[in-house]
Length: 477
Image (tube, rainbow, N blue to C red):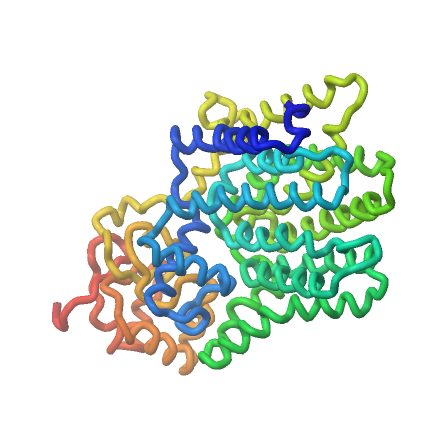
C-alpha cells in the first residue's frame, strides 16, 4: 500500500478519498454520532448571532469571533445544520491533509513524494470521532496548515517579505477561531531564525501580520460597544487559563487514552527521524522547524487542558511529517508495509470498539458518544420553547432555544454571583427583561432571590411540573 501512494497521480488521490470515507462513514452509518457538547454550544451561538445578537455585548459566551460568525453563517443556511457541521469537519480534515502534503512535496523536504503525508494525516485523524465534529480548534487549525507554506523561503537566499506578513495574518485568523493557536507565532519565529537573513525585521513583519486581524476585530467591537465584553469573555479567560472550550470536550482520562496510539507512533517516528541523516541543508533545517512545531502543538494542547474539542488535530502535522521516516525503505523491505497495516488495524479497532463486544471495556475506553449531552427525560414534554437555564447543564437546549444572552454559565456568573451588587442586578434585569423567556430552568436555586430583587421580570414565573422548571404566566396564575 505504501508503494502505491509514493507517486502523485489522480488514481492515488481518488483512493485516498475512498480510504478516508471507508474509515469514517461506516461507524456513523451504524451508530450515528449524537450532537456533542461542543457542537451544541456552536449551534446555540450561531442561532443567537444569526438572530441579530452581537457577540460579547448580547452574548455571555467566550467563543472566538471568527468562529462565532462562521457558525452564524451556517445557521443562515439551515436551522441547526448538524449534517453540514459533520460534512465541513470531514472537508476541513481532508483539505488540511492535502495542503500539508502539497507544501512538503513542493519544498522538497523529503526524498519521497506522492501522498504519504496525506495518507498518515487522514489515517490518524480517524482514531477518534472527536474530529468528526466541527470545532473552533479544527477551524482555526486549517489556517495554521494553510499558512505553513508562507513560513518557508521562496528561495534559498531568503524570504519574500509579503509572505511573512501573510503567515502572521493567517496565524492571527487562527487565533480569532481558537485563541491558544496564536502560540504558533513561536513556529513563525523559529522559521525566521532558521531561514531569514535579517531575523529581527522579518519577525516584526510576522508580528504585524499576527496583530492585524485582532486590531480590526477590536476596532469593530469598539464602535459597536462590545470591546469590554470582547476582553472580558474572550481574551481574559483565554490568557488566564487558555481553557476556552475545554469544558465541552471529552474527559481528560478518555482523551489521553485516545491520544496514546498517535502519541506512541509520533514518539517512535521522532526518534527515527532525528537519527536519520538528511542530504540538503534545507531538509535538515525543515526538520528543526517541525520539532518546534511539535513543541508548540503540545503547548496548545496543554493550553486547552488536553480536553478541547478537536485536540487530536494538533498532533497530525508533526505525525504526518515524522511518519515519513517510518515509511522509508529499510531492511527488510516489507517491514514498513507490515507496520503500516498494523497501524491501520489498530486505528480501525479503536474507532469501531463500540461494535466489538467487550473491547471498549478491555481498553477502559468508552465510546465518545457516551459523553454527548442527552435530552433530560424529565423535560420530555418541553420542546421548541424559548428558555433560560440558570445552571451549567445545557441539555434542555437540545430541543429548545436560548432566549437570553446567558449561554455560558461560568461567564454568566459574572452577574449571577453578585446579586448583592446593584450593577449586576440591573444588567440581569435589562438582559432578561428585554425579551422574557417563556420558561426558566432553575438549576442553581436562584429564582426565589431573583423574584425578590426583580419582581417585574421574574415575578410572573410559576412552577411548571418538573423540579426547577418555571413557566411565565399572567398575574395571579
